[in-house]
Length: 518
Image (cartoon, rainbow, N blue to C red; front, side):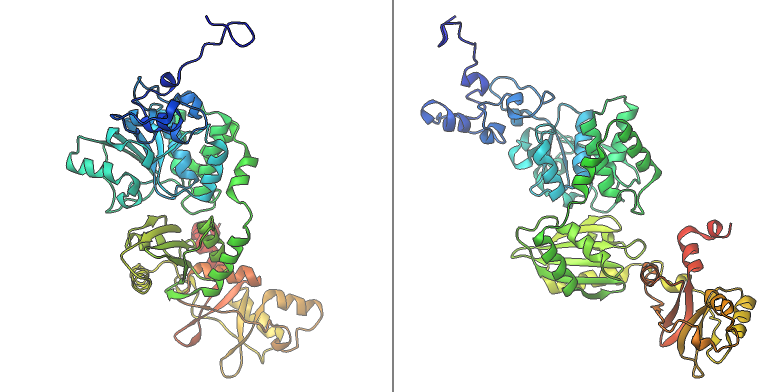
């Protein structure tokens, strides 16, 4: 063995051609190899990770791909040897990321590939954990070599444009590509045919995969547990969204037992809004206008260098009384639509499906290229109006309404409330106009001071908050909470007292009559 610089034996080293064979990626060898010469009969292998690597060669460990990466034969680049590809929808969120990692534990020979856009939280997590959870851009994968495609958190063709060539090959020959699906969304007419389908009505598809990993006895380490918990928290709103299920909660409990780090979960779930995001939030609130039914809409230029637009839209809806909200961001060649809705107000996923988008009942998105802003707004309004009415104030209000006269004494009003079996009622003047609200608590207050003989007008609440009969129930609940009141007069077709919605009405709507009558 030749001597090294210090006189000792020289450490054995693999040549550059051994690390990265010439046929594997001539482009990489030409740029970094001796003489920077391009071989005449060779071409760059698509998706060679070494093109962007600081370390020379395509050995997986050198590229941060981890020990689970597939080993390749001499002369073949790693990204070109992949035959099983795992991918998810564009603008992959944390549930999408977590589910791809979980599927790769079931298929360790596969590669994870993403589309062009990642959710900002997903991008931030991968920036720190990329070596731990290897992935590639689908543009850098030789899709011609792929004969098995696994989709997670999606099954609609329109949401996976980055694998359109694969799907076209399957359309031409169904035996040319095996498709497997893991999803938790409702079925649609745009769903892809698949050879294996794993779908369950859960808050997050990661829950379904965590259950599968447990059933198969596959270990989950603390870093994986943290990512899986992030995925479930993100898609269930930390179990606050109506799509959340007990199975999601049980999966989270098990992941905590596996060492999920909650401080990391918190870091990536709710980072503070930066200055650009705060400016966008102000613009959304200032530009918001009614669209149709309980929905509002705003149109803005497509923002540049603003991350987390979807989260800003969620914050905007929370600061309004609208039941749903559509933000249209107008760009040179496309319109990006982000929709959010309160529980029970509107199915925004169904609305955006009509323009090629999709998502959940309360959160959805679309990229529209064939409609201008005016036509898009008209299509959205049409779809909102076409939806069957959801739970509205008129569906839960009490009618007819017992009323008190402002001329009565407090004692007379108290006796009437007792007789009617209600805790409060509107107070009207001689013309029948609502001038206040009186509750049993007001009567007790007057009684303690010995003032039961005084007129109701001196003890009633003069500030009356009402609500429209066709408003979503969520709006009535928001007004009750904001003003700390227990009843709202309901206005309909010019009648200021078409009904009244009370705390009891709201509780029955939320929990059911059985739960509230116990």
